[in-house]
Amino acid sequence: VQLQASGGGLAQSGRSLRLSCAVSGSIVSINGMGWYRQAPGKQRDWVATITRDGITNYNDFVKGRFTISRNNAENTVYLQMENLKPEDTAVYYCNAEVVSPMTFAAMDYWGKGTQVTVSS
Image 1 (cartoon, one colour):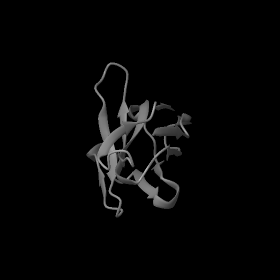
Image 2 (cartoon, rainbow, N blue to C red; image 1 turned 180 degrees about the vertical axis):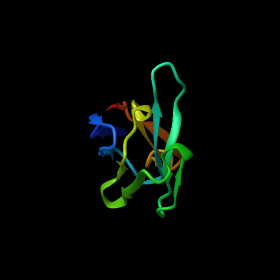
Image 3 (cartoon, one colour; image 1 turned 60 degrees about the horizontal axis):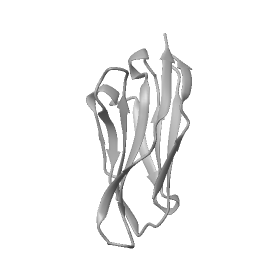
Image 4 (cartoon, helix red, strand yellow; image 1 turned 45 degrees about the horizontal axis):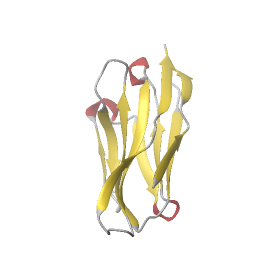
């Protein structure tokens, strides 16, 4: 199973970016999916999560600005980031709980991360 994130880059404060993360490999189904971020010198924080049924949850520091969504048919999760702030600068990681056909057990997988840099 592989997670490939894309869409990061440089943006000015107040602008928008959209991250995507595609899950590929041997998959029976994908349960929860989410985005996390890690700024230099800081621990990894969760940003937003979404269940298979589309129930979302957001960390307070992105509520009202970021929107997580997913396309179950394409095994992809998105993060639409609006009104970006310099403090949003971090490496963003996608996460998926994937059910494998080998074990039919759910396991957590992580993407390699994509850099988001917001300038003031």
